[in-house]
Amino acid sequence: MSQVQWWRRSARLAAALSCAFAVLAPGAGAAQGRRAATLDAIERHPFFFHGQEVILVTDAFAEQVLTWLVSDDDSSRLLALDVPPPPEGTRERLEVIGTFYDVGRLDESDQRLTGLPIRRLSEELLRKRWPARGELPLLVATSSRPVARPSTTTLRSIVLDPERYVDRGVTVIGRFRGRNLYGDLPEAPDESRWDFVLRSADAAVWVVGREPKGDGFELDVLARVDTGRWLEVTGAVRVQDGMVLVDAGALALAEPVPDRPPPVAVETRRLPPPEVIFSAPLPDDVDVPQDTTVRVQFSRDMDPESFDGQVRVAYTLPGGTRIDAGAADILFELAYRGRNRVLEIRFDRELERFRSVTVELLDGVQANDGAPLPPWTLSFFIGG
Image (cartoon, rainbow, N blue to C red; front, side, top):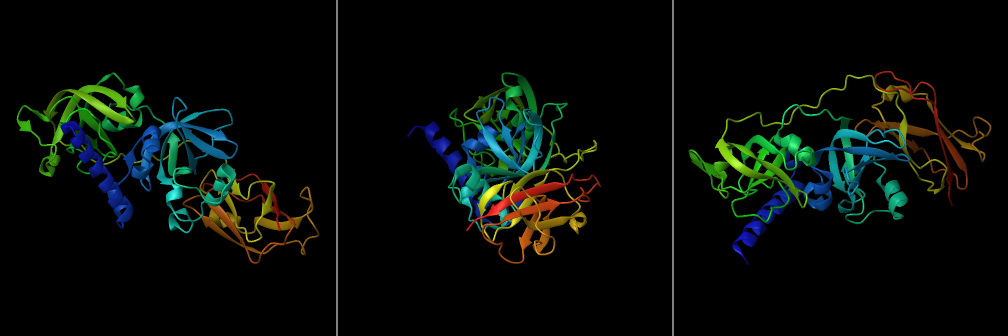
């Protein structure tokens, strides 16, 4: 084994151990904070990013009721929940923050998936009850907004949109992190034993091409004691196997900069009316289980109190015609899951076999800013 190969294996091992501790240790995810990433990096290293909060800059498009995040060249795509779908046939550039899951690594009973239509997604997309590892990567979004072009070049802006900076000269400031001593990145480049990680806030890159030394400093890539130093790096950006690299031309000591992600800006523009973006069962679904729970997901945060008295469920004739009132009504309980913008409808008893069921959201349901939801209807058929 060559010396370069040994150093590369050591860096990979450090990243793997750091990721394993983050997945297994209680509260580790919160301590780690979110990671700036690309779709390509997530696709190449799903275990590293599994269960992590990430931030992405990417295109989004709608495919029926689903929202997909897609790379510029369409080579990578990721299903996203809680991201309002753009108009059909269009793509929208978004900054999305959310938690990434390789769903097949989780059990059906995992609390992190409560209220999410994972089983229905697996059945519709994969034709199986539950995905295997790698079959259903998923981002559960907590915020999304149109991308604002950065006014300055930072590590964060480079990591989020590296193709924009490829072969361009940049100067960035970040904390020296040695040879991936803290597992900031999932893989190491095959360049030299002097390669090191530079990090600021939620973004990290590999710096290659120069030893970490210069006027008044000489840092050790294996010494954590040196990771409190800040460096200014001037060089050219390139992307290699999903890794963002800076070919350093000059290094200098720098003063620390705020080492925290910028706050997510509050959306001040007028928002569109809320709409239903997903339901389980799907519209006109057949062979629905008798013990089903109806889940309806919205494009906006909803006012939970507005659902009171505005939801109706009944057995109907084919085509949706309602049977005589009273005898046809179905008793149920409502629960609104604000984290996922999902309304759950749980029935007091199993639904009758071979019957058509219609769920109605009546006039009066509204978003938390008072914007009304247009009346909405879902019909499905109970199997045997």
